[in-house]
Figure (cartoon, rainbow, N blue to C red):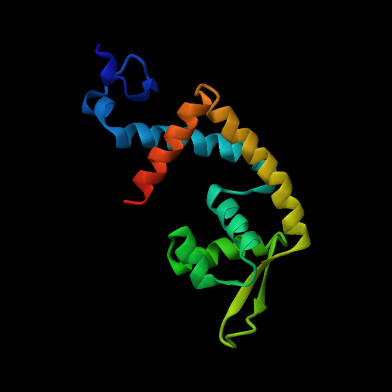
Length: 153
């Protein structure tokens, strides 16, 4: 078997054919590992990567409107509603009437949400270091730049 046909070696005895040469397939396999480790790491909060991202964006942008959150996270408005609902339930986020638009609500992190976000962020940073521990600092920075470039195309 050729090394380039092993595609992440989930099953080392399987020939993955063209998959072993596809960046997208390797990226997907890496994404699965990242998601699984993230879910285990933040299990006590029942937080998904999307919910964590929403919480961070809401925290950093007080009174952000739902449509702006959807745009910032590149999700449909209905997806943003689902995220906010999931963050509102444990008391991490609240909707407040907008001071500039009577038809809209601004999103704000609560005290409970801010405390949880501080704790979650520490765990997420450990998770990120763990996942990239096989890389040098230079490789990590290079990978981050390449992924950011791919994401903006």
